[in-house]
Every structure is written in C-alpha cells, then in structure tokens.
Image 1 (cartoon, helix red, strand yellow):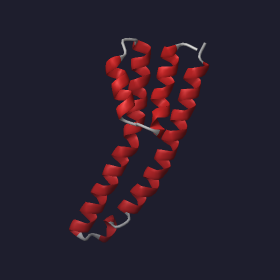
Image 2 (image 1 turned 180 degrees about the vertical axis):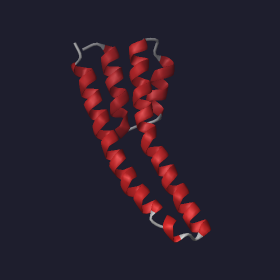
Image 3 (image 1 turned 90 degrees about the vertical axis):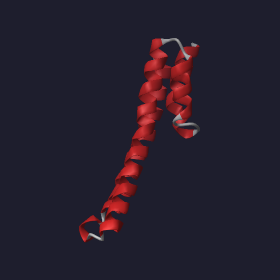
Length: 104
C-alpha cells in the first residue's frame, strides 16, 4: 500500500480523532496534489456539522432574545437536523476512506 493513499484515507478517518487539525496539517505539509485534494474534501466535510451547530445556537439566541414563539422550535430542529447530518458525515468519511484505500 502506498503512503499517499494511507495519508489520504487517514484524512477522512480523522473525523474520529482530529477532525479539523489533521486534514489542515496534511494539506499544508504534503506536496502531492491528490493528497491535498482529499485533505481539502475531508476538511470541508468535517466543518459541515460545526456550521450546523453554530446555526442552531444562533437560532436559540435569536429565539431567546426576541421571545418569539415561532422561533422556539429552531434550536431543537437544528439539533435534530445537525445530529443527522453529523451521522451522515461520519458515514460518508468512513466510506470515502475505504474507497481511497481500495483504489488501484
């Protein structure tokens, strides 16, 4: 197995141990374009649940500040949707990591 495939797959698997840090380090340290591409893809997929969480917290703050009943469900909806997206992101990263390892 070649080291660039292993490094690319580890960028995806890093969702379990260093979601933001590892892909960023790999992106700036490696010189291989294919590894950089996988590092960037995995970083964006790791950032998606973070943005959903920020939107959920923002909805909660806006709902609490305005005391608007229509916005009361926003944080709960954000948490449920965010949790589902996070699970899908984890599954996607595992599948992509396995696909990279299986490339010929």
